[in-house]
Amino acid sequence: MSELVTGEAVALELLPAKFPSRALAVLLDLVAAMTAYVAVTVLLVVTTSSLDSAARTALAIATFLLVPIGVPIAVETLSHGRSLGKMSLGLRVVRDDGGPIRFRHALVRGAIGVIEILMTFGAIASIASLVSARGRRLGDVFAGTLVVRERIPVGRTGLVPPPPPHLAQRFAGLDLSAVPDGLWMAVRQYLTRMQQLDPGVSWDMARRLAGDLAARTGAPLPADLPPAVFLAAVVHERQSRESRQARRPFGAGGSVAGDAPRAAGDDVSGAGWAAEAGGWSVYRAPAPAQPEASAVPIVPSAAPSGQEPPGERPATGFAPPA
Image (cartoon, rainbow, N blue to C red; front, side, top):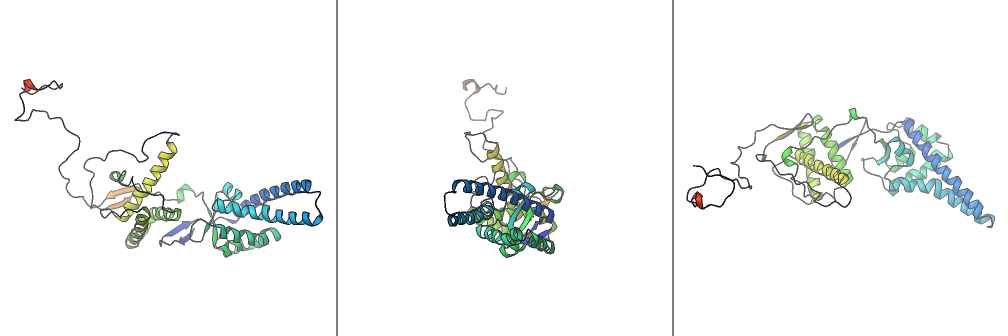
């Protein structure tokens, strides 16, 4: 297990890829790249037979630079670190801080990979990966990247505790489009590990993450909720939106946010919450509930005094008391 510290001061538990899985992923990528390179080379030989030797040599060099080198760099950049071999084995290239890679990271990895993988038949890359504590080859060291496992065994992962029921629809109107993936990852990692942290450290991390999340959404941080509960509620709202969008049929109307009514007596503002057994439990009793003031009109069981006599009332289906 490797712990990486993000900009939000949250330690991310990432599983570096083992050497056998990395080697197999590289082998699959090389087979795909060389197959495409051979096919393009044969096509160029057939179509450029009328050119002189200098032109054919230039095309051969350009083909070698573009197909087995340029195409893998483009694929890693566009897929954020998931090439064909890594995708099939559940691996991904990430930055040292756990974020997605960019073009410069893929370019450095690809350029150095020509020397340590193609020109030396993988000898330098194998030695560097075996010596490195996190299995990084020279391209990863110079690019500041790390190959991690995406398919983590279920028993070793923590679950994000769901928020209290009364917060299910409170953040349905938040704009979550500006929240980056790195911040979502940091929040999820914190929520799965907060019970293992010191209470003071956990509270400070939750407060900073909640402040960053509130700034990205453009809404003020709720003063009546602990930061960890706010984080869990917003993460649950994002997951609910993604689930509803996946289940919604094409062309269906309706609001994206749910419209479930809030149950009466759920006002627990000011109460403390603690994650416990996959959920949240109240550890301080809330203030006494105010008398119910439902917005739904209630049909009286008896005619109030001062109204018209029962005989003059219109038929409503209810018989007045004798």
